[in-house]
Every structure is written in structure tokens, then in C-alpha cells.
Length: 405
Image (tube, rainbow, N blue to C red; front, side, top):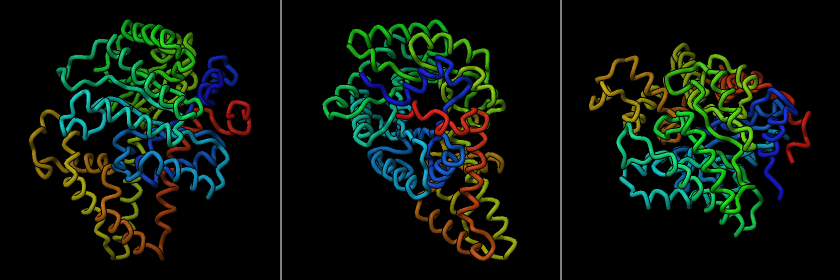
């Protein structure tokens, strides 16, 4: 059976040919980030993974406004426009029950949320996605501190992979790759015994289903980084890598944003790393720099107020409140927290009409002083190139064409 190029690349990494390399996955949380990622892939002459969550890209458009088909179409057109030759692999990130905010806020039952996710799996396959992250590690019916039994995580993972594979074959679609697990403690995989039990259960189940050729190329591991920490733990990564290599997989790190030691990822045998919120913040930072320039020329687009008001109106800022802040009005938060939340939540409202209008006004106000759009893309591209360099992926496309087809 033929395998997807992503599996081929990971198998080559395991064999050490080539050695000391880590694939970069960028979350396409805005059009600017996606364009910058494609430009960086061209500059790096290296493959790019675009890992889109259910909140970002889904059948209803997500907060980017893109469906899976629209994302892949945008990538194809933009890649052709800029002359990108390296492969771009569109991926579903965290596909599982209640991992879309709407499913939680509207109190979807398990049956309804799972049915919705499975429909999205089918849509992603139809749209030509290269990889599906299967992540059934959330169950809102349990307490916040109660993880799902690990055998149940494996059972639901198998059910979702089987559904995706059955649909893929029915539609005569080519092979795809899979990613499993989560870095979140509530998934139970932070415990090494549970981690091994999950791997063994997944392996046994795939063989019983006749799906051993669908073994995931990535297993997500908790390697030190999370929403509030930025130090990658090479020792833990090496330990986890040793546990997944026999299955033909490597560890993928999430929350790699602003990581202190990105150069340690390839040295530790990490197969891949996701970076997402960092680029939302960098896009915000770039726009704030442009606003400072706008003030110097005596004009005002109103973008800063538009961003803050759109974040408040979205109500999604409340998910980022600490326990001490729960129930507070946005304007009752400290100025520092308001800024942090606005910067973090800007990903949700880049496509809000009032934000688009104010951003267009900013760009117009600066047209005699700065190419504002190019500045934002350049700023983002620099951040993305940092990972391509540290992950030792420069010129991968021309150096290893045999792994990309």
C-alpha cells in the first residue's frame, strides 16, 4: 500500500536519513499569517504544514471565514501566485468532540458533537487535507479535573480513524496521515503509563480493524511547553520519542509559541511542532507599530478601538479569564490584562466588518509612508523563518525530493 509523503518523511527521520530535522506546522489563524507562512516556505525551500482547528476553519467558515475547501483553494492560488514549489500540507488540528467552542457553548450532546466532527473529517478529506489530528480527549460531562479513561480515549480514537478511512476509501481518495493524542493533562496522556497504554491499545485496535497501514505519523506529547510556559524539555521529548519510534511515529509538540530553545527540537528527535498563537500576537504587534506611525502623521483609523470593541462583542475573551477574574466586566480588568486578552483574542475577530474597515483605513492613511500590508507580512515571515532555521529545514525540498512524492 502506498503511504502519504508525511509518513514517508517521518519514517526517514526515524531512520536518521535525514537526521536532526523537525517539520513546522503553522496554524492559519488569519489570511496574513497564511500568506506569510507560504512566503516563508518559499524562502526556506521547505515543506509547510498548515494546522487548522475546528474554530479556525470548519464547514461553517470558522473565525477565519474559510471552509476546508476554501482554505485549500486559497493555498493553491497563493502558492501559484508567489511561485512556491515546496509542498503545503493542510491539516486538521484537534479534531474531536467539544473542541469547537460552539459545541460547548450550545451544549451539544456527545452524539451530536461527534456526528459534527465526523462530518468535518469527511469534508477535510474531500478538500484534500493531508493530515487529520484525531483528539477525543475532552468530555464535558466529566469534572474539570477528571480525565477520560485512557482505554476510552483509544476506543474513540479508533472509531474516528475507522470512520475517516472508510469514507476515504469509499470516495477513492489517496492515503492521508493521522496525528493522535494531546498535550493536555485532561487527556490522561501526560502520565507515561497511560501514554504506553494508549499506544498499545491503538496499535492492537488498528490491527484488529485491518488499519495498521493507517498508524499515525505523529503522537502529540507534553514536552514542557503549554499556554503559560515556553521552555521545551529535551529529556522528556527524547523519552517520549523512544516510546513511539517502534510504531513508526514521532512526537509532535504543541504550544511551541515563543519557545525558548527551538534548536533543541530536532536534537531531541521531535518530528513536528505547531506554532499558532504567536503569529496572532505578532500580527497584532505589527499593526500596533503601524498605528504608532499613523499617530506621527496626525491621522487616525480607529483600528485600536475597533479591535478592542470587536473582542468584547465576540464574548470569546471570557474563555481566557483566570479564576480570580471570572464574572468581571472586560473594562474592570487591569489595563495590562485588557491588552493581553485583546492581543490573544484578535485571532477571532480579524474578519469582523468593523475591524476590516478600520484596517483598510489604516493602510490607506499610510500609503505615502509605508506599504502596510507588506510590512505585516514581512514581520510575520521573520517569526516563521526563525523556526525553519532552528528546525534545520532550510532547503529540504531541493535536498530530499524523493521524500515529497
